[in-house]
Image 1: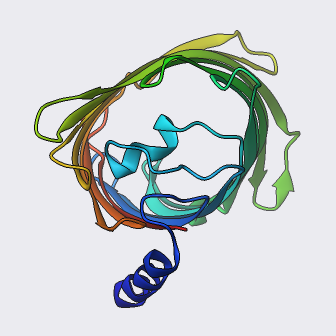
Image 2: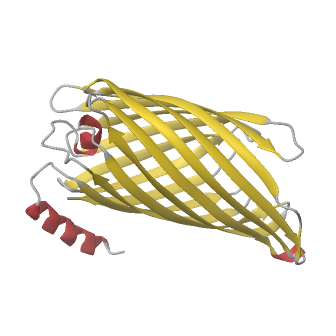
Length: 294
């Protein structure tokens, strides 16, 4: 994908679209992940389309927060792929994964409550050539979420997600009986956008999820995932972000991500991010994404 081609499309869309309003969005991104712990070298790609039943209108505030400031019913589709090479059981292994997600939400008559439904899945193949071993993983998940606005710039939300997974181990061509796993997740979150002086603003969000996993002939395991993020907008176009995540599972990972997001026109944005594991893993990730709104 050429950035010069994207910029031409963005200018055409911006010229044909009322300023500051959008109803459709197409976006894509790539990410490079590395880690010296497991000799990880991975490349991910993702693309998606988003349709709002009502356009964002000419809302004030950061361009990146228009969808938050003017809630609407919506539909979206996201697909992605992840290829990586790494050490598993001290042997070289390669993983190829495909992901998809289809979802949407309905804005209730009160204009302040969104009820959403998401359906997604993953298919992965892990190959360890030296042993002629292969793992095949697939899952399907269904999520129900509710977002309620306590004020025009402050929302709270809750979710329930049920994931069913199956892992098949293949040794030298022999297929072992698949292992079934079910995971139930509940979570809560909040988000607020605070205007500052001189056209600046600050967006804050926090969330926590609790998951319980059940597998064949194994005891249940539980894990928590915390996330806290802040984005400081210098003006309506440019934002600087900071995101901290921490999990309490077998790996006990935590990571910190820095990002910069800029709208080059009122309908074309680009975001660059850099993240690094600060405990549990030394994984590093560089992300580049862009989107057009019209």
